[in-house]
Length: 320
Image (tube, rainbow, N blue to C red; front, side):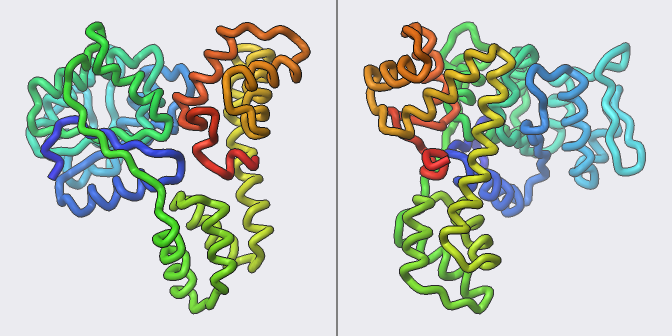
């Protein structure tokens, strides 16, 4: 198990990547550390990255203490690992990986596309170094924004530090209808609740086999006993996520943010081709929008795994 040095685990939001990762790590019986890259702010600094590392190493301190004690620039203060990120005791990522290589260790990075930014090359250099020299280390990278994760790794670009390194990709797919129904029924049975087949079918139809949504819907239904309220609460949650996406684009410009909103709205209303999308956004904007601008928006939405071929990958996002 885990014989490949770099494993990437991909799939749309709420498909179950993190759950599968945690179960696999537990079952492997191999020491591991997990970095949750979602905690990194955009354009994060070295301090932010090393804080994330400290947190991850501290969570696995009981299994790594013997190795960490030997590393200059690392101090163990009770149950917390302190790492020097500047000065004479600075610990580079490559050095850290070399020391961790004393043991068989898995380094997992959840939502690894968030590592993109000013430090991405340094991180990829360290991973490439470990790929070549640290055979006891395995990297597992998950990503729900699949295009952005591939852009970060950039294994096909000869200028990338990870060029030609082999990555084994596992892509999680949504449940089939029969499995979705069985999943919900078993969940309801655990709470001794008999739910009508029509209700189960309606939930399955709404959430299209995405395990995270099915779990959320099941919990909402237990509390509310209303499919309509389940839909409303789920859509409200998706709206908040879309608003956060649009807000992040406002840092580029107010116009860019607005155009992301309009493009998403047009696609949800059935703009299923380039010409229809361009016409719809132009009509909403009241301007002759540049082809290149709209093309960039479309590619970014695809890279973030929100749409593919002018269709939403998540039906709840479409409704939102």
